[in-house]
Image (cartoon, rainbow, N blue to C red; front, side, top):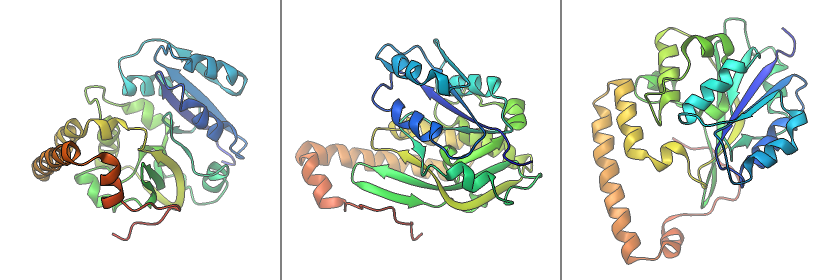
Length: 265
């Protein structure tokens, strides 16, 4: 099918400082067949006013209470009519205006493909780097790619949805489920999205819970080791921050990267 309809879903809650960047990255895509959906959780900080500003560019939007980020993402999936669905969080964005065109106007995507994924530009407070997905065999232990840099067939999204008993890692659970169902994953080697961790991410702000939920999904004892390592690093970081100002810690331990660079591992 030429130019299949792509549904992009953004979920928001009190995101007045970040949502406009995300909206602009979606509505300015050069790809001609995009359905943009925003699910707001009842924001009171001015987020809704920004959404209304771009209402004529949206296929659907709503502002009402929900039961968390994955419940909101499921709401978006239920109203999406596209052949493919992408979830682009507030504060994140497509890497360029031509990302969707580069993916869906080529012959890369086959009829048997269920999930498309690619590289991600990760932004930290000290700079940015380009993160390539790990080998898919790692799906047995953890999610190899960012959901912002992925697209899933809408019929599969609506068949399984995100399991809302997971507060941090429902996306890992979802893709892990598809992997176990022998879904076809296609890697396209382009940078698809910018994942901004400098403003705080769900899993980044809840690392212990993320490790625990990863363990529930994968069933791997390797996660116990990661939990212990996390607690050690967290305790040491708290100690150092108590002794050394954070600005000095950044200068001593982190190098600013002005341009995206691929990981060497």
